Image: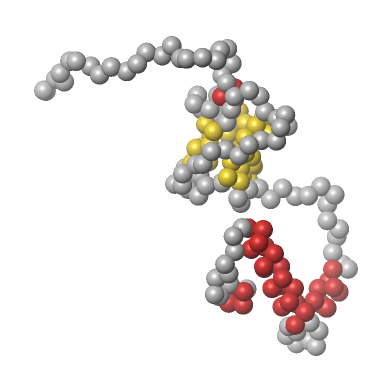
Length: 164
């Protein structure tokens, strides 16, 4: 497949465009090439084999890696050396992470609470994608009221370090 379709490297702008490109190339190959040792094309042999296959399941298979994760006190989860944010109301919560090839979904039970573009290990994490309207809780910690924080500002110590 690499020699037939990927040399030179195809110029595409998205995963969907790449999948469409590969599908068209594979279908053209199946129509044109014969199976070795027979006079039939790949497409003809596929049609014969298709009759013996079981039907697809009613519910589509989720092509993702599913993990149970716990958010830290800063409302972040870790996956493949990267950190991704979740709403602050879920800090310290056990959550379900679904890692797809191009994005991550973070779930609390049956509620989608965060959606992120998947970053490669060591990459920078962009802002999370917007969730559909009406999903997720307010993005604030429980018991917190909006407004300025009462946190003390950091002041460096005036003591000199011990020379020993």
